Image (cartoon, rainbow, N blue to C red; front, side, top):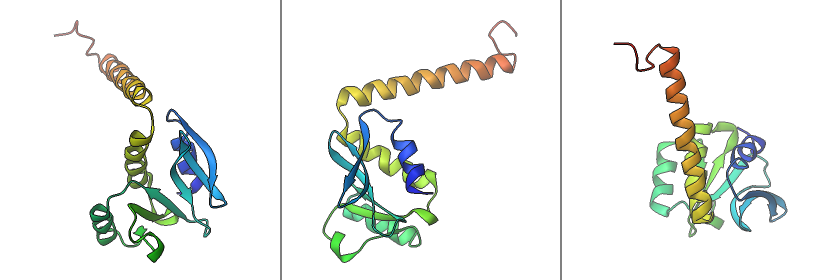
Amino acid sequence: MTFDDVRKMALTWPEVEDGTSYGTPALKVRKKMLARLRDDNDSLVISGVPLDEREILIESQPRVFYFTDHYRDYPMVLIRLSKAKRAIVEPLLRRHWRTLASKKAVREYEESLATQLLRAKRLVRRSLGEGGSNP
């Protein structure tokens, strides 16, 4: 992954916008940091990760997750984007987004996802000939 990949993903969520933090590109939700790129241009700083969870992430995937002494006492984890996959990054970001976005924005987004899922299921059923009229 790259920061641009992360950016494109996160900007599809309500209230996410581009910004900067410590002179590097960042993603913000209602002016609060969702994530930022470190100076090395490969590490993503994600906040909202409890320390015990961070330890589990680092133990399970040390090539992807790490932290520096600067972040030792903060609920943050660093992700080496060059080693990460979307399936790893997205859930962490989305969870933190839910804590920063307004309740209304989260609710409307989740309702929209549910509607899209129902439509997709209907299309699959129709394409399989399971429209309900066949025995």
